[in-house]
Image (cartoon, rainbow over all chains, first blue to last red; front, side):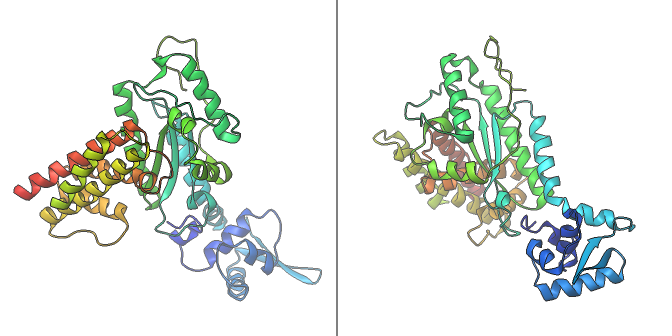
Length: 247
Length: 119
């Protein structure tokens, strides 16, 4: 699926992106405004498309001053299809969040980044996902972490410092490492069946992402800038003597 | 299959070196290459064809269909591919745990490619 224009999964014509724009809009739009917001299509093409949709009754055209504006006819029996077209991307994000929220071993952080987050990929683009998990067995927090990091990395470093100060009982067990791997493998299959695209995972422990900043700064800066958070901030019970509570 | 074995041998050699952090990236990168070559070898032995092109994830889909346990092989291969950009382009310094895991995954794929070749 082309996440820059998911309507292509349903229709190759301009009807898809035009209906999606009108369904998202809260007010009537001129042809120019629709062309500006639509994922594809020239103004001429969009004008022709709108004329066809007006004929079908799903779009209303109204003269407003000197402009002709268009809006989705939300009473039309097919209007819900337009609303669905506008929500394909949101539906994908909703499913990702839903799946991650019920993982037995919850991620500390999960962020969609790259073309899928920016919305500028193509039908063959991989879907990039950052997953942050608990430290692995025997793993230590490296000393070269960036002490003044801000954004999501700053929060993760704070958390890594707290974990590190609370001894190694918060590391994953061998069983949990296997369980984590199975969850990620399963997610790959789910994302492929939802979209047809391959999932590319940057799978890091909290100590890895907090510890090695010099060479990874560009990737982290990109994730910070364009990343879409998929998890809510988990709550942690540091006083627990058992495995850390991540949900 | 021999290419896969060679990449793996060098990956194991580099993994034992402890001079610089970057050696971990090199070891993981070589493990990824060993995995790609092993995947091609398994597909060639079983299906008589391999995936052409740079999209190795598409190759993992072919591997999934190559053997009865192809799904498990493809998952191992995909975990290696996740490391590809990290390891090759130095986006991040690959941790020792992850580099060891990559070499272990590559070893299982290469070993399987040898079995398939000798069937």
